[in-house]
Amino acid sequence: MFSLRRVKNDERDAHDLADLLRLGRLPEAWIADRATRGLRELVRYRHHLIGIRTGCKNQVHAVLAKCGTRVEMSDLFGAAGTAQLDSLQLEAPYRSRVGSLRRIIGLLDAEVAGLDRQIAEALAGDAGYHAIQAIPGVGPVLTAVFVAEIGDVTRFRRPEQLCSWAGLTPRHRESDAKVARGRITKQGSRLLRWAAIEAVQRSSANAGGMREIRDRIVERRGGAARNIGKTAAARKLLTLVFYGLRDGHIRCLAQPADTG
Image (cartoon, rainbow, N blue to C red; front, side):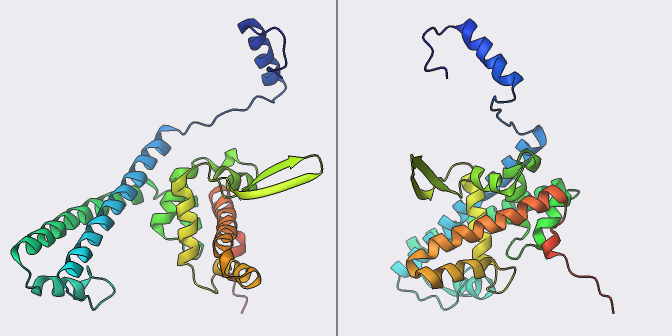
């Protein structure tokens, strides 16, 4: 509308904006309130620390591989892995580096635990926070990501709008009778998309249908469609998150009453 106008100045722009506002056609941007911004700060910082800790752990594995030391267990930093690290006889430079990395990992563990307590306290009275933990594969950490990144869920009228805002819907191009759909837009919060995909990966094959959705698509379309299946399951999961945050419960996941 503005681009087709022959005369363009501030006065005309002001009149046009006033008309759009009066007709309810002026798009509005949502700004998170102070509490949501504070929660996001905690959740995003925790995610950043986890990334640093993962990098340190990978460095320990790299040093052991360089020294030809075989790791027998799946978790090198669990009880059995810690015992193996304590008993290792490495040359001084490698022993010094592994010791330094383990101390850094210990400090990061303490910081992450402190952030977990702060986040849990901030969300203790949030009904949506407790409701969406009923979704298979969604624990307290991923739940905090959903609550912080989405914020006020009532700004979305339908779950489809939340999925679109999260960047999990395909691009749509339409010209005359030709319609083309492409890859997902990947707009919005990258952390929110990660949490949705991570929850799908963590859910069991027969829990709530999340993995079942992915597996059904892979079975029908082949192994190359694995990412497509994960994305479809993530949209289904975000739909449940929408209702959980909006209503304080997820009706389809509620346990039927015992009438016996």
